Length: 365
Image (cartoon, rainbow, N blue to C red; front, side, top):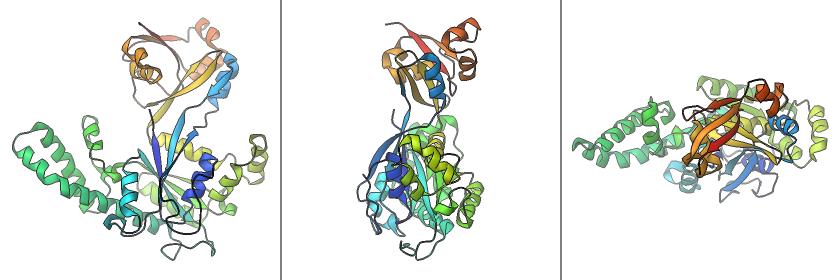
């Protein structure tokens, strides 16, 4: 089950520097000119989760296998992209394929790095990108809705439902509002997602600050946080330059570097976790002497579906899930202690798996 966050923004805001730091590779060329990232680069990174170390120690696991999330570095967008300016068509095509958007905003001054708009204004930059995405969605829907409405008038139930959702999105887009604000019921969500609207995707705003502002942010990042709060979105402050340096430091030396920089943890760790949460994902864990492994599932997933992430046979022949909450497992010192304390539960097909659950699935072959 793959989940992708697309890293977007105007040219020269730090997207590729961020991507390089995320993947600890030089796969994405970071250069001081627009469109240096011609093809989207995809990198998988582990989701930081200190619980895995605790569980592995308790179970004496030989190895730890964290859950992972993909980040896609997408070519920089410019004003007019919805009409094909710059690499507009390619940009829009690539971004439609991701599950969530990580919007990098430039929150630093640097005379050596040009800004495509000629000034530093992260809120205006966000509006530029959002406007282009809304225009692209508007154009897409207006081209598709007429034949759907004709089928709906003919009584086709699927078309009736689709036309209703398309109309909800069009009303918002024509008012200059993103499609993610549409009031969609849980039953309608799957159909709404099939519309492929870019502005229906969740967004995380990333304020890329200078090194001196990495710990507490600056006036630019404060504006980003205020904007995100007003939009009901999340934001993260970090310095892509610092993070790119941290990425090449040996793990055992990173703590000292972070302490010297006045940072409690790497900004990328916060951003990765924020991206994971943005997608509405949770983690469950399987624990044993061979390995402690984290598994990714959407919030609200029932036990059989969760089992199917490991293997389809587990879902097909699901009988029950031996379930222990993380806190109970740790407090009891492991599986044996949890069983003795009566903290291990037997859950059936309707059980909704919780974040941090330690699970052992029983199934029929």
